[in-house]
Image (cartoon, rainbow, N blue to C red; front, side):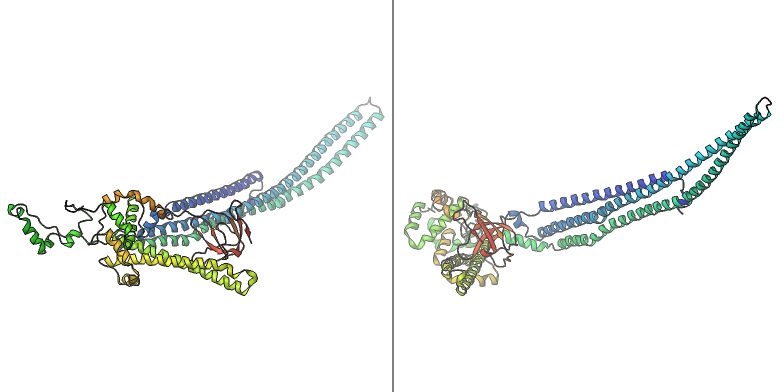
Length: 592
């Protein structure tokens, strides 16, 4: 099967067919290109969807994701992000392995097709030229033959005419001979050109055209094979990411299987448990017998003296009604005026901490949170205090790391005085040590409150008792006195609304203690000269060439505080960065 033998006379149709084949190839390239755009768009939409439902940092929503079901949802979002990445891989591979390759092949194919059909047209033009020469020679031979016949007839006519002179007859005979010779020459030329044309025509239809058409056929078959290979690559690109997509889906299934409803239920308990015991039974008061309502005051007082009121006013029933029912105040229960209590707080030194308790009550009324979280139920207060203790311990560790760094730098200065003055670090070292001592005292204060709360809880773990027991001896009596002022003898919170409303004006004296901490402003920028791995608490990792914001310059300790974004900040060695402070900043200068 050969186009050269089977389609020897279909030059124009082959030219149209090969052009159609190139158009099909370009159409397939366009199809794959649009598929890559769809994959990129789909991946982008998946990433935006995953980002949209990610919990926001430092928000209440982020705290809710401690439940296993929410963690599974976060894992699902992360897996969907990886899933989107695989669609980006599909787009990239199709673009590099199919689109770019086929586009280059189309250009080569067009050039090859142009060359082959140029050779075909050249052969056509040659055979047409030979045909024209043959036709011209044939017409000339025909014309000469006719001229020779006419000359012969004229000679014969002249020879038969007796009136014509002999000279005219001779002239006619010579003219006939000339025409006859010209006819013979034309015949010979025509015969030669005919043989040449037949040879050229044989070469054209049996050699040149078959070879050219064979090349065109091979070119077309290569195009067909190439588009088939591209379709296989198209499928393989999808097939290559199926295992990874399967892992993403397996990750979603694994996250779903990790959901533990019992654990989530326990987390709900830990989040909302108050630590109080349920209220006891309410005694029945019988009003049907008039005799019981006319009992004398003496008998009532005698019954009180004998301890019988415990049947009705037992500690359990009385102490546990407060979370649900407001206590009725008897007219006999007269409170001291708040001004008297305030004067007593101000003049009595042992109860100065109780004034802080009163201040916290006022701040709570005004919307601020007391320092010891006394506005919370016992269990929630214990959790907040434990969280505060952990935060303070982290701050202490951070300061200790800074002290160690300053100490090491001082040792370097001692060994190499040309690098710096060791005495210049003494002030910073003393300041850090003072900060550590303040944080330790603050920690002891919160641990004392924590021990106080854990001592009142009805049930707590043995580990928590051991931890809080370390600080029982450090709990000052003034703290307990404050707690007694805030709570009733049965452990319930009984601050009076009237007391809080009367002394709201005093809260303005303590506003400074509840101001929110504002982030430090940027005073310049810095460029990392070297890569630094911040492995200690309070440090931050930087990459060589990275540009960051400076929020606190070197205080002489060899460390500079920088910020990458709102959530990432820390210290790096000053020698690792090139600092450029703002001209408007105080003491602006450049460190290298």
